[in-house]
Image 1 (cartoon, helix red, strand yellow):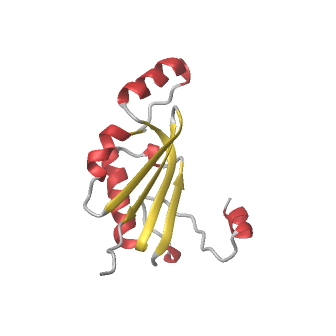
Image 2: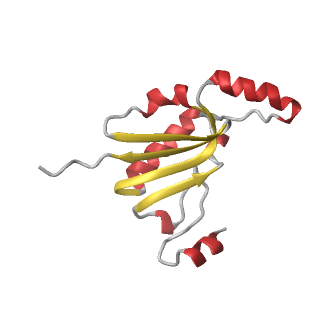
Length: 134
């Protein structure tokens, strides 16, 4: 996937690292955007939030964004309905439940945008609001 991304956008910097581990030298710089797909549901909410704090504090330029495409639901009731329909095919992981995570993401100056893509998929975009020039 990295080779494909580099071929399509040669001016961009793409790299791979373990999200909760030590990052390689190429990651010790600010980025305009960090994109993650189908990964955050592997972590419990405290780890998700710690990772987001780490990304914003150490790896994003001012005005930078984190965009997450992942498995998620607007409420626990919707998740439970999908779980019931999935039956034995259900994998119990740490899926995003928007009404549960929303209070934790209400940090001052943090802009949030959610888009439900399907009954069990979402895109979550987070960025720090830039001060407006006077």
